[in-house]
Length: 183
Image (cartoon, rainbow, N blue to C red; front, top):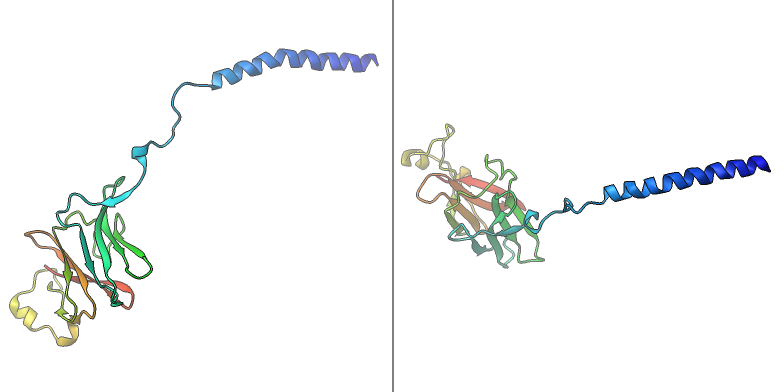
């Protein structure tokens, strides 16, 4: 019995010695410094661009008779811009750009867009850049075969640099976005 009392006394003694130490450690952990919580301005948000003179068009990309809304938007955190396409049917939304490569064209941002328009359907279009990447002459364009021209069966989106070279037509073909280079 003496051994049990002796052992219990040692446990009680060690508990009493360690208890204030544990409370002291807890006190040192407390701090009045602000925690690393995201601030409201750290949130990533996609907003309608205010830097583009024209930032919204409507057109029928998919040919269902309902208008799609196409907006130039900006990611508030990365500052990359893109196109947000909201379909008239079921409100499906597609995004082009915003830091993601756009249709293999070597850019991920639409900040350069100055001209933003609807491309009419039932018209023929073709890339007006030759294999060397130079703008085709009138003579070269006249030699383009009819089978190499694209007739848009639905409306498209025209994006271009204002008063400069560079841009294209974005359209849907079999549910996939396509690009026609227009200089």
